[in-house]
Each structure stands twice: as structure tokens, then as C-alpha cells.
Image (tube, rainbow, N blue to C red; front, side):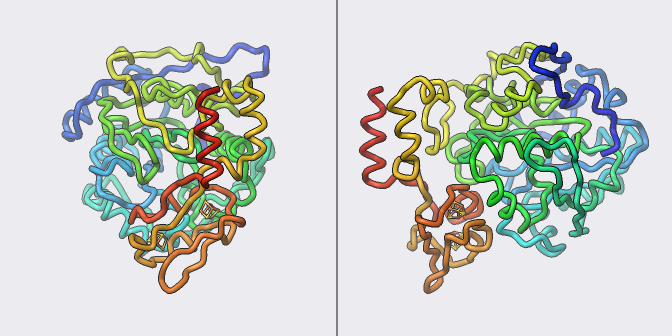
Amino acid sequence: MTSDDSEAIHPAGEHETLPEVPVALVSCADYDPSHVYDALRRGIELIGGLERWISPGTKVLVKPNLLQGLSPERAVCTHPAVMGGVIRLLNEHGCEVTLADSPGGGIRYTAKNLMKQYQEAGYAVLAEDPGCTLNLDTGFRPLIFEGGKVCREFPVITPCFSSDHIVVVSKAKAHILTLMTGATKNLFGLIPGLEKPLIHSRFQTAERFGDMIIDLNLAVRPSLQVADAILAMEGDGPTSGHPRHLGVLLVSPSPLALDIILCRLMSIDPLDVPYLSCAIQRGLCSADGKEITLLGDPPEEYTAHAFKKPRTYRGSRRTIQTSPLFRMVHTLGKVYGVRPTADSSRCTGCGKCAAICPARAITMDRRHARIHTGECIRCFCCHEMCTEGAISLKRSVPGSILHLVLRWF
Ligand code: SF4
Ligand code: SF4
């Protein structure tokens, strides 16, 4: 966290011109390690070479999207071939790499659990190379950020403080809470285990949560971003959606610029993504990405038309703002919006959802999860954590009727 971030995420006033920022989009059809390595090297060369962003011979923390170690073909975690390619390039640059992340909040942040997630995600093999260490230190410390808009102190995992640079290697996915996740939201994984639900409970609205994510990125200032969009996830991501082949890797110093290009590939309006909308309002980036210099292959060839959005998506933000009926319905959000529902026939009684719930809205009843809707703040952490597909998102009967009516406006 001691890097020069002059071209990374950089505040600009409302009337200031945003600094130009490069994003490389490189074709990579599959996860063959040599194809991934060649594509990554090309992408990094397009944005000026590794030496422009990472000092040679330094300590680098490489942060994947680990979430909860699930096999690569499910497209939940950053693919191990992409992690391996990034680590190899950093090793060739003389850097000492530590792979570190804190899995989703329902998983206790212990060395044993970390090792299990690494193994299941396919990362354990990466540590066979002497140039990479898997982090098993489960300590964390406060990171103070006086310039935060909504959050000035974050609990952050210890290896961040001993690294010279942070390289984020994210996964492109639809997301039931934030519509999409890529580079910017990935940093939430630096908050350790059960501290995550506490943060969710402090920042309950999409806007406040979005501003918190932006503050976290400004506080941590990663040096480089890589996104695995070879196999993205559409639908009810980040865990329960479906893989969708896009066939590209993205590289940039800026998480916001990278996410805006990802939005284009996923046919998503950046203004519908709460944290991007917050960043746009704060003058950190623009919705049309005019500050972005796009390098490499043409995005049109990799754009996923009819990319399936999560069921929580309520339509374009602009539609909501311009329709009085939508505005009225917004105030009835608790009736209209989808809510988590537990399916006892699929529930194994593992209790992960109850452990993560920041509102304490889930109890275990005879080894089955029971959700108390009145207490639920709709953070959807339980849906994110359940690997059994036992938590679905449904509307109430009045909500479903309203939804049908609103489709005509
Ligand atoms: S709903 Fe899912 S996470 Fe919750 S107890 Fe059941 S299986 Fe576990
Ligand atoms: S029950 Fe509601 S508040 Fe609790 S984790 Fe699920 S969505 Fe969040």
C-alpha cells in the first residue's frame, strides 16, 4: 500500500478534467496456462509494462476473488490459471508474491479454513512455486483513511501492511446486491471474515455501501488490476449464477476504468451499479468512460448481448427516476423488492447463513435455516454464502402483482 497511485483511482473535482487512464482488453479463449500467460503479458505491455506500475524486486500482495473456494468451472473464484499467470509475471519481475484474501463472511477467518478455500479454488498448487506464498496469517489491523466520505477506518487483513504493492485479480460477475462485481468491489475481501457483516450493517443502503467501497479503494490504493472475464458469471451472482463465456482478460491501473469497460462487455449501465454511480458523482470517473484509453482488441467482439441480470435488478436507474409510479413504489421497497427465502428441502443445516447475517434475521430451527423477513435488511449475504442453492430470492404475492403492473410503465 505504499505505491504511487498517480494514475489509479484519482479524485477530480466536478469541473476538473479526469486524468487519462489506460485499460487493455486482450482476447483469451480458454484457461490453458500458456494462453493466459501470453494474453496477460500482452495486456500489461499495452498499458506500459509492469515496471510502470510495480517496482521490481518488491513485495506484492496478489488478491483474487476467493469468496468461498469453489471449483474453477463454477466461475465463482478467479481462475487459478489467471492467478498463476499474474504470479509468474511478477516473479519474472523479481517480486516476492503473497496470495491473500479473506473468504466470504460466513466462513471464519482461520488458517485451517483459508487452506481449505485455497485448495478448493485450485490455488494450493500455486505455492509449489518458490515465488509464491499462500497467506495463512489471520490477523487484521485498522487502516485509517481521514479522507473517507462515509468510512474513515477499515479493519484490513495484516499482509496488506507488509506489501509494497497490491495487485487485484478479480472475476467478472453479475451480483445480486451491486448488479455487477469486478475490480472495485473485489477489495471488500480485504475486510476479514466476520467483520464483513458488521460493515454491511453499518452501510445498509446501496448508495452508502457504494460510497464505502469507493472509500476502501481510495484508502488501499492497489497498484494494478487484472480481471478474469474469460468465463464470467451472469444471473444471480456472485455465487449462484451461471457461467458465461466472454473470452477476454482486462488489465488497468484503475479499478473504476476497468469496471466501466466490464459493464460494456456485460451490457450493464454503470449508473445502475451503486459504487460506480457513487464514484461518478464524486468526480472519480465518468459514466461514458471518456477518460479511458482502450487498448488491445475491439470490445464489440466480446460483448455479451442479453447478459442475464440478477433477479434483484429493478430496471434502469433512469427509469426509476423519471417514473413517478416507480418513485412511489421505491418507498414500498419492502413489499416490492425480492427477499431471501430458505428452502428446507435443500438446506443442510450448515448454519453459514445464520453466522453471516448482519441483522441476525436467520435462526436455525431443527437444523434448517429460518429467515425472519421483518428483520432482514436485504444485504443478500446469506444467498452469497449458501453453496447448496437453498436460499432463493422471491417477491411476496403483493410484490409480484406490483412487479407485473410496473412492467407496463
Ligand atoms: S440455507 Fe444454505 S447456508 Fe443456510 S444453513 Fe441451509 S445450507 Fe447452510
Ligand atoms: S436474511 Fe436478510 S439481512 Fe440476513 S443475510 Fe440474508 S439478506 Fe442479509
